[in-house]
Image (tube, rainbow, N blue to C red; front, side, top):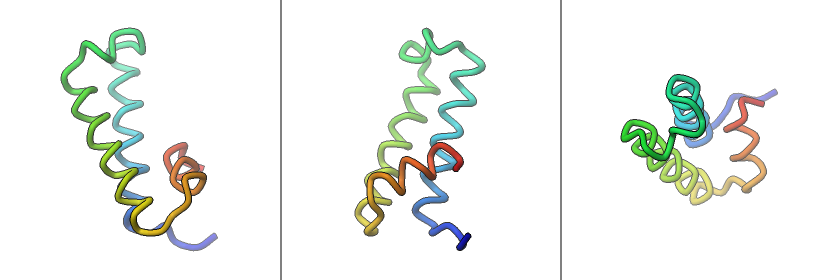
Length: 67
């Protein structure tokens, strides 16, 4: 498997941060947690950056799942 692009790696890290916060606060409480909302906004930005760099939606989502 080839090395992940910087854009995919950034999205993968941002998505993992969202999952980590969700695990701490509980999935049902995510929307009320300012740290999770900030992490979600960053993940959305990183997703857009990866798409703008030419990665398909499937590639980006796969990277975000840690696959």
